Length: 160
Image (cartoon, rainbow, N blue to C red; front, side, top):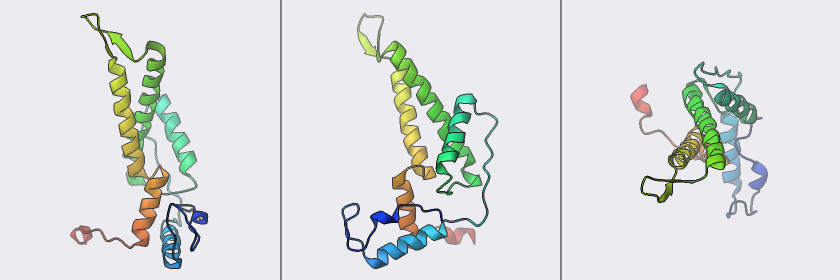
């Protein structure tokens, strides 16, 4: 079974994440994880516009997330944007190592290099995309909690 979160940390009466879990909470989370288990494997198609560096991130991400199996066909574009952001962030990190954080402006003062701000923007994008895609532990735990608490989408009736 593909577990969304590690239930060994959720033992009844034992502190896990700063709280004592009740039997009901542990069962609800286990049931939530079971709902996320697919009967049929989903094959995501890598978009052709990704460059070689982003393609490598795509392959690594799918390999790393195989155990969780929470990505779906509708996630392809967001995953592609995530992979591109990771690849660009890596390039800019290399540029910072080579050229530094500061450049001299026309007035002779040192100012932050433009690639530093761009690299930080990509870092923010990576965090946002990874959160939306469930690529980090907190996002997967929140997803399991929402399902366990049986949160209802207030807009769900709009699509019936």
